[in-house]
Every structure is written in structure tokens, then in C-alpha cells.
Image 1 (cartoon, rainbow, N blue to C red):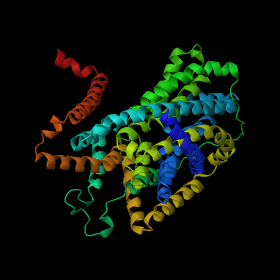
Image 2 (cartoon, rainbow, N blue to C red):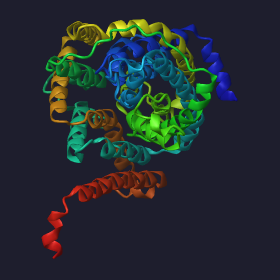
Image 3 (tube, rainbow, N blue to C red):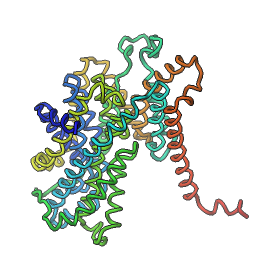
Image 4 (cartoon, one colour):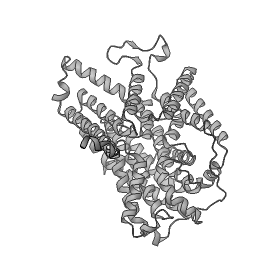
Length: 503
């Protein structure tokens, strides 16, 4: 009950209300723009949070995540173009309902399911985060090192089609993390005589460059034109009979979304498609799926909105970002000197409770703002791409420059954007690089401090019980991912390659 009391106190702060409402509105707009993912929408705001109150800044970013997950369903239903990756499953039945003249109902089901998913996910976040963090309060430097290694082990599942490319990206992030002052000796490293690099490279510069700037470069190189919306549908919510029918797929989406959100590296896209598949499996109307089933919208939308909340569990409890969006949110914490993890609940409990309160406001305001923003989103997806790109480019430059009024920061961001562009071309994932960047300091400093405590004896990482347990989990995580890849490769190998050897 104490947690509810603390959240209620934070709800009395009008700043939390304003930050949550503004974040949801901006998130819906960003999600409604095809190609602008929740992480990019958050990255665009990140520079502007420098001068904000820590609680308001974190609430603003987290609420943007919530709003963007819903906003992605709008173009998915209207123009068959998912605004976010997680909305790809919504396209299947959402656009079919649109073709049947039921776009308003499809949008209503999406919003209704998204609000339920957000509220359920928030409940799970409040129930799970603090107990997990209290377990981690006994962490020592070896345990923190093992925790960082566990976070990096997520790379094995976030590397896409190539594990090697994932490790290359992670190595790039780790290399960037070493620039600046040595955490133990205080000496300068890889600064090349530049005073601008003495404090290292701020993660926000790399994140905005890789996610937002590279996306603009990709869109600039794409000559194709998107679809246009020629109608102005009005949102329509399901009646009592349909709401009862949607209860099962929404429950399925909520459970799968919670599980996938807590698991680092899973994310809303996987949760959406898994929920869609399970909803079809348990539905009494299987034949409607793919032809305009309302259940095919309710399940994935509930799932990806639940993920937006529960993905914060590993971030708050252990400091491990499990997705691009939570990595951006981690950057928001670090900007204000807050380190997510076990000590966050004791040193900055007010920020955590303020985040809970803000997410509650965000979930409720999603309903009202979602209705109000629909005409704006319809107008927005009809704008010519060059105008949208120019607006976003100006927003990026002004935001980055406002941090330190430094042209050097702009140069770093532009270089990161160029590198991100080529990473996209080579299909090298971003998240391993971001993980390497944000976890690099934790891994290096904890490793070296542990060696100082043990007199350079590496056995300290195995004699510490917490450290040993986390290292074993990290090993199993990597081994399981690698083993799965090997099995998939063997299954996909043509049988003719075995014939000569077997005979």
C-alpha cells in the first residue's frame, strides 16, 4: 500500500500531468509518421530534457514511448504502413477493416486495447520492479561487472540475422565508451588532444545521430512515395457484445506483452506477432483472421502497449535496457545523474514514484488525447515527405545545439548519423552499439575495481555468489541463442549436402 500512497502524492504534482500529456501527444504524432519509430521519437526529445526537472524529463520520455506505440497503429490501419515495427501485426486485419469501411471501428479497438494494455503493464511494472531491485541491493563490484556482462549478453538475441554483426556493433559502442577520462587512474584516453573529448562522448549524441539522423538519410535516399488517406474516418468504439468477444485476445496480449517486455531483447514486435498468433489459435472465429478480424487488432495492440510499460522492469531493477526505446530512456536517466538499478529505489525513490504516476496519467490521457489527435495524425500522414524531413532535421539540430551550445556536439551527432546510415545499409543492428556505449563504463569500472579489491585475482568473480550466478545466466543466455542459430542453420541446410557424406 505504501507504493500506492507515494504514487498518489506524485499525482498531485501538475508538472507530472503536463509532462505525461505532452509526451503522449508527441508520441502519437511520432508513431503516426511512417518510419519514425518510438526510439526515434524519444531521441528527438532527449536533448530538450537537459534543462527539465529529472522527474518531469523521465515522465516525458516514458510517456512518449506509450503514445508512440499506439500512434503506430494509425497509419497501419489507414494506409497499410505501420508507423512502428510493433504495429506491423495490426496491418493484417486493421487495413482489411478499413477496406470494408470500418476504419473508425478499427481505430477505436486499437485505442481501447492500447489503454487496457498500458494499465495492465503499469500494474506489472509496479509489482515487479522494486522486489527485483531489493534483491540486487547486496551487489558488490564483481556483481555489478557480472550484471553488465549479462546486459551485454542480450546482444546475442538482438543481433538480427548475423551474430558477428551484433558483436561488431557492440564493440563499436564499447570503444566509444572508453573515450575520455580513465575511471580508475584519471588519465586521458583517446582524446587526441581535444578538450571537448575529456568528458567523453555523451550517449545522447550517438543515440540521436544513429536513430534519428540516419533515418532521415535513409528516407532521403528512398524515392518511393507513400500511400495517401482520402477519407476522414471518425473513431468508433466497440459495443458491449464486441467488447466481450475482445476480452480473450486482450488477455492473451496482456500476458504475452508482460512476459516479452520483462525479457530483455524481446520487445513489442515479437509480442505483437505472438499475441496475434495465439489469439487466432484460441479464437472461435479463426476464419476471420486476415480478413478484417477485430480480434486481430485487439491482441497485438494490447501486447505492444503492455510492453511499453513492462520493458521498464529490467531497466529500473538492473539498469539493463532491453530495447532501443528503453536505451533512449536510460540516456534520459544518465543525463540527470540518475543510474537505473538497485540503488535507484533508495537514492531517487521520488523519481521512480513520479514515473509510475506519470505512466498512469499517460495511460488514461492516451484515451482522450488519442481521440483528439486523430484528425491531426490523418493530416500529418498526408504531408509530403520533404516537409516532414525538413522539420525533423531542424528539430534535431536545434535540440543538440541547445545542450551545450557546441558545434562540436553537432559534428559528433552528424558523424554518428553517417555511421548509422552505413550500419543500416550493411544491416548492422543499432541496439548492440547502444548497449556497449551505455554499459561500457559499468563493465570496465566494476571489473577494474574488483581487481583492485582482490589484488588482481580473477577468482573474485567466481567466489562472489551473485556474480557467479549472473555470469552463469549470461553464459546460458548466449549459449541458448547461439545454439538456436546453429539448429536453424542445420534445419535450413539443403538435404543434398548430406547425401554424399552419409553414403
